[in-house]
Image 1 (cartoon, helix red, strand yellow):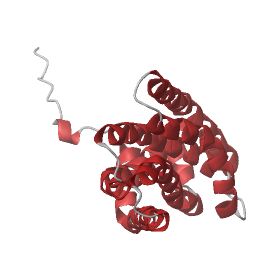
Image 2 (cartoon, one colour):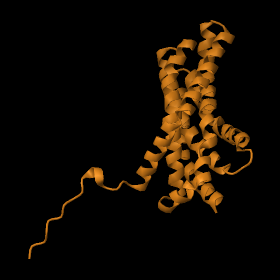
Image 3 (cartoon, rainbow, N blue to C red):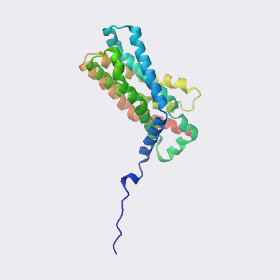
Image 4 (cartoon, rainbow, N blue to C red):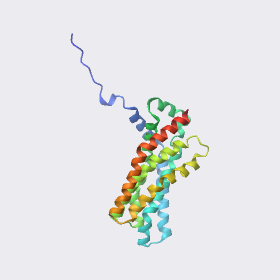
Amino acid sequence: MQTPPVHEEPASKKTLHPLLLHLRRELHLARLNGAETVGGLLFLTVCSTLFPLALGPTPALLQQTGPAILWVCTLLASLLPLERLYDEDAEDGSLDMLQITLHPAFIALGKMFAHWVTGGLPILLATPLLALFFQLPAHNLTVLMLSLTLGSLTLSLTGGMTAAITLGARRNSLLLPVLTLPLMTPGLIFGTLACTTPTGTACTANLSLLAALFLLALPGCPLVAGASLKAAQD
């Protein structure tokens, strides 16, 4: 007796991994809340353009202070969407449902990734246009983009962790920047030093330290955030 042939399901009908489903859901929700992305871009644009007006048209001064100003404005603009990163899911019970199929650390990682794609990446893409106001040379702009890429990724991880820690707090809108910004201070220092020091060993060393912070945050922040989410839901 012959065994009937097994018909495989088309790839489009196969069930996706729960983590991929979670990522797709988070990106969809972030797309629906596009006003937060626009708000971050507007904040970054207004703050970045005010400084050249205040400092004056001196090229040397603008080139010296430009990377630090863009770094600070990027950090502040990326903080705006963090306040509600977990709140809505905690209120409607979605966090409890997600924990049935996913470890809390992966839930936090998905939200951190969505925060960077919809918040950090648009800000990063707008940076070259804003750098024109500071008359940055091409080689400085390359280092600035690389440092901001590492810095924005680290901020999404760190901010997602602190947002999970402050979940349920009465004044989490005040606690969130108080906890997040000090943790990002080393990244701010290494990132601005990489952009302001001459290209060479010093610049590479600061970028390496910035990359090390990102590699430390990549496994550590989701684990701490996951533990905080689990404790908040118990």
